[in-house]
Image 1 (cartoon, helix red, strand yellow):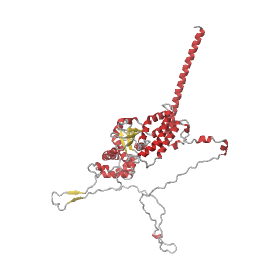
Image 2: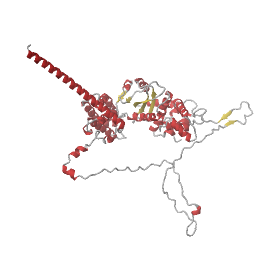
Image 3: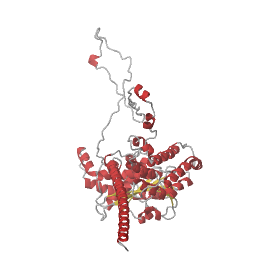
Length: 519
């Protein structure tokens, strides 16, 4: 090969090497750009979580320029001519204050307060004659708050004997029946005191250490340790038959919602233990919610929790529920929407042009159609309505989701993968009329333990954590059945002091849908 050929060969080889290097660099640049985009998206998401509005409501999302804009007002305004811009007058939007709703006081006992003239002033200023009352009109109403009072009850038990047999050595002494003490050898652990402590803890989420200060101000120095022991004794022991009946009744339902949330139990070697919650469906005969505490989140816990249940389960898609036997699974459309809301918050595009915004809008249409369901519909009518009105929209949503291209690591990619992974379970919703579109029932119940966790912080022992589960179950189920939780618990605790021998039927009468609080 002559010198020119060698030069040509080397040049071609060098050029090929440069091309390969440029291709590698271009590939690397694209990878880095993708990585930067994903990291920027992640930063935007975390910033939104930390400083943004924690809401998924479409109305609130519309307030952000990057979020859902259903009407695209800016595009409309851009179509106006220059003349119309010059002729426009500055305007403002006046906030309409909501009128105060009239508070219903019909259930509050009425006490009439008469304001009369004092005797020394009840005379005519001219002739000094005695004034005569001619009217007593009602001028105004006000609600009076009567603070709780403590009262010490001394129980005296009457003792009887037969006067005719008094001389007999075998004469029998009779005593009047009286209820046992709820807490043995304790005059402060009465049904009313314990019901109030439980209501403060499980309804209003006031931990025992704060209640300790409240009781001290009332003149009853109860310690937090004492109150905690009472909660464990009452809910883990004395009310355990009632809690077990609640679980059994729950497993008789056709359809259940399930969810779980972490909780800190100091006695556990794990970073988190879990509260699992199971609730009945909205269209079931009984409104029930049951909390269970577990040391883990494995599928074994789910199997144990729903053993003997043969029906339909709606979840958020957690893989631990996939191993449940004898159950059909339903997905949650609200969770699909939530993933796209997160993607929407991270989007750099205008909301009206965002794919995620379009999906959120379509899913909102499904829920809006669901809200138009007549409350008088039976299961079959409800199913027919959903198949005609909702199912085509849902299928259209999943068709759109399947068609989009997105990086698996991006928020949109995660939303797509979750949605398509749950598509089959969500379409199962349209098999029965008593199913629901979302798992929100369980999520609302889970919030009870989440709000409690924010105030209680932790439980020292597993016994305390289990007592919390039983207490939340009974009190939240009472709320679902439109009962005053404290009155319900006070009635239950009073009734069990009259039960000497365990009687399932008597405990069954204490379930929230059976009990009579008027007597």
